[in-house]
Image 1 (cartoon, one colour):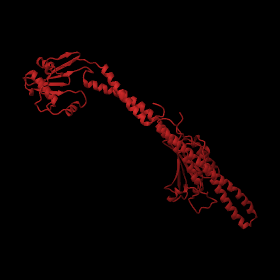
Image 2: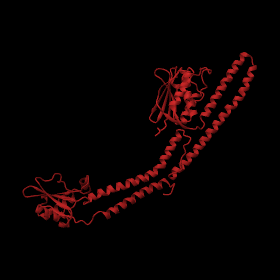
Image 3: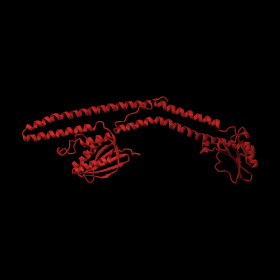
Image 4: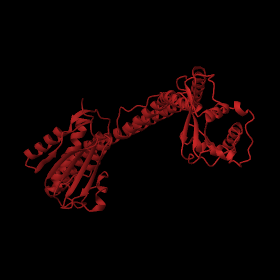
Length: 447
């Protein structure tokens, strides 16, 4: 199959290849299986009944067994069995009612299949035209003796001696050969689609290195090119917007600096208000710059998240903040170290600033690292738990800007988390305060 062939052509090739392989197996079995074996006839069965003796021919045996009662379940005949009864009864010179015939198909449910494929007997069927020369291989017979006992005649064939056994072997060989062949072809078809799905999943987690490989069927290659182009356009648009925001925020600091100098010449009672407004605007600009930098492309590497959280908690504790790590499982993540420190730092700062302190718990749930940052503060109303993640949105509109932020910390934290394939959310604690939950994909354990 030529590289990049359409998926329809590859599936069609799979079907054709399996069909050809099945025919080859059938031809090989037809040539390799033993043939030309002489079969028992109705004449042999009649002789075995008269002589009460088994007949052996070419490692196959016509068995004879005398029982006290007639075999059960043989009463209902199909047309073939009725004709066989008439044939054997005629050869023995006895009434048809003293002969029972059962089609002996050695397959699970074989008798049921034969009854479905043949019409029920009427009891008026004619004997087989071949008479004594008719092959008896697929039947078992029971003949009532004058003393009331029954003699049961059946064929015992060697392995592969009957058509049923040959059919079972043919099915088994087909399964052993065709299933691996179909698996190999299907695996070849699915491999590029699986790689495509894994790349899409990585791109959805924000992996900047996720690139769609242009391999596999033509349709998959075309979709990969389209998504790669879409990723490039989206990344370009985001970079352009980020650079624009950063440039505007940076340029605003120049007039603010001039205003700060000019405020020195203003009357003292007005100077404090002007300087306070300038400081507030400068803080907002700083937040915008941090937010813009947080959305830029990051450099990722394997990091010890446990050590990072513990070190940041220790740094805050040294400044007098009430920050403790109550539980810390050893977890590593793949992330940008600067962005991750900014993310964790924002969560800890919020808990200390608005909740009076922070208690950290670091857990591993499956393939996710979970950081819980809890505080005992006043918390937030339910309607604000999601709104505070919007840029410039603060949980308390009346909060003093001197003690609070400009409303970009949580927006920045969520942006960094989602860029790493995770997320951040807030929830109210039953005992009071808030719980910030950070989830990030955990790195695979090193072997």
